[in-house]
Each structure stands twice: as C-alpha cells, then as structure tokens.
Image 1 (cartoon, one colour):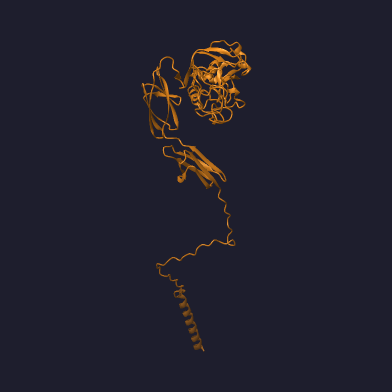
Image 2 (cartoon, rainbow, N blue to C red):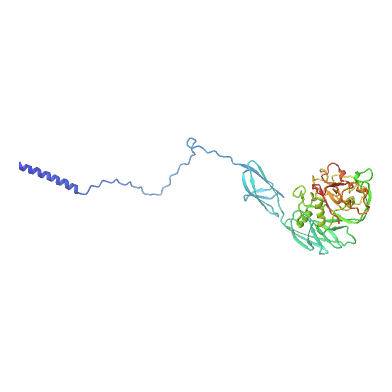
Length: 448
C-alpha cells in the first residue's frame, strides 16, 4: 500500500517537473505572414487613359456661356492708302473697316511713306462703331530761295523768315506763298509746293522801281499793301438811289495811301497774339472760322485798332474804304460793276465759285481795279470813323475822318451772313455796330 502510494507520488512529481520545464523554454514564435512578392519592373507601355467625356447634365450642371461683346472699328487717313496695325498686327490699308471686333482697348498705328506715323489708342465699345480719322503730317522737305539782288527779305505764308540766300526745312503741307522784297526793288511773290522729304529750289529776280511803288510789304506781318493814288472821287449814292444815310453824294479828295490787299487773316492775327500776349478772339477755336487763311472774326473795334497800331498802321477812314472799294470805277454799284453773282463774292448761301457757308479764304474771288480782294462780301470791315447817319451833309471835302464822337463805329462791305439782299454789298452801303460788338461776320484791314 505504502509502495503504491510512493509510486503515484513519483508520477505526480515527474509530471510537475515536466510542466515546469516546458514553461522555462523559449516561447514559440508565431508564424509571420509571407510578404507579397513585388513583380519585377519591366519597360511597359503606359496604360492608355480613356478620353475624358463631358459629364452629362445628370452628372454635373453646365455653366452658361456669356456672349462676347463686340463692335466695329473704322480707320480713315488723309491721304488714303496708309498701312494700319492694330496691337502690332498688320490689318490692311486705309480706308479700313473692321467688323465683329471684341470690345476693349487697342493700339493703333497708321503709317505711309514720306509721312509721320500716327500712333494712338482707341476703345471699341459693344454694338458701336468707333472711328479713327487722322490727317497724316508730311515729313519735312528742304527749300532753297535765291534772289537777284541778294539780301532780299523773305516772307513765307505771311511770316518773315530771313533774307536771301535762304535754306530751311519746311513742312510739305501744300502750297506755300513766298514773298521777296528789297528797297527800291519793290517785291515779288511766288507760290511753291514742296513734296514730302523732297528738295525745292526757287530763284526770283526783283525789278528796280522808280517813284512810289504800286505795292509794298508791311514789315511787321508781311501783309501786301496796294497804293491808292491821290485824287477825287464821288462818295455816296445819287438822289433816288441807295439809303438816306448815303446821301448827299459828294466829291471827296484823299491823299495817296496804302491799304491791305486782303482782309487780316487768322495767321497774321496769331503773330500779334503771340508777340503781345493778346487775348484770342471769341471764335478762335471754331473750325468754321479759324483756318489760317480765313479772315479773323469775332474782334471788337478796339481789337482791330490794337492790331493796326502793332503793325504801325491804322484802320481806314470811311472815305478811304469807299474809294478803295470802288477800284477806280465811277458810279458803279459793286467793286467790278453793276451786277453781282456768287462768282463775284461770298455772300448769302452758296453757288458758282462761292462754295462757303461761312467765311471763305481771303482772295478766293477776283480783285477790283486796285488789286484789292473781298471788298464786297466775306466779312464786314471796321472803319476808323464814328457813325453819324447825317455826316455827309457836313463832311469836309479833303481827307474826312468822321464825327469827333458817337456810340457806334462804321462797318463797310457786307458779309457772308447778309442773306436778305445783295443790296448791302454795294460799295456805297453804310452800316454800323457798337465798338464792343463780337460777331462772326466782322473783320478788318489796315491802312498806312
């Protein structure tokens, strides 16, 4: 019994020792999962992606497309045929019409051989036509003027520029009037047209004159003045003719004097403004009246008188003006005779040679017997005299100068604006205005 007990005890001890021994051994590692083997890298073609397909309305809503704002662009040049670039892209030649142009700002370049290139910017607006109109400036040209004798004074377009021999570069912007004068030789004028980037040479021979010259050049502004000889003339209208203020017709004697061949122009008046700092006339910026060769208008009597003093001259007396206008004719209505048409003068409306609704360039019609232009029509002209409708009844016979005082000054000659009747263009017709009047139908000329 004891022997069996000992046997079981031994078996238990053995089992216990075996358990303890198992617990003291290194732990069994859990099997790790095998790594996924990467395939060897080889050169293969990339997988072609399918073309993108726009989503259907069910997949993504479509954004509304706004219409492009567009307009048109017209480019015109003078002269025509100029090359046009828009934002540095050649587009053709003028006149050029570009339609369906996206609205926005563009750089414009207009160029032509022998002319300065125009550059600018333009804004094209939606559903509008935008126009660029440009007069191209000719490139300067060379001009040479010679004379016999040498040392003659030169006026170009009414401005004194030097003495002969003369060389200069001038703008080739059309016709230029060259006038040469020298003491004891009188003067000569010649018109010359120079081509852009060209060369022009002229030579003028002056002729020596004896006695008082028929015409002279006024030193200050280059105005040509014509001699009105001393002597008598019939002033006013006979009984039964004209207005009451033109009678009685009477004989007047005048000493010799010089009077401007043309009405004072804007170009000449600008010289006065520039040198004296004088104010510009009222219509100075109006394109209907401000061309250089149109008569200056919008000047008061004081303005005209100030100009006359600046050039060393004066305004004509009423008697001097009428004698000048008659051109040596006796008893005639107009400076050339008894009839008048639009081929003779610039007055009411247009027709014949008269193509101007307002003032015309001076000298656009034929001169009278004294070589004077526009003594009827174009613009009325200020005279030196105060106005008195009854002055003829008491006027002195020799060199009358008008009343000593008054409220209005005499104006003579009719104008483009006198549309009612050519009656006002008669050489005997007398008109008057307050000296402070500013109007687009009154100018002047000077006497010395």
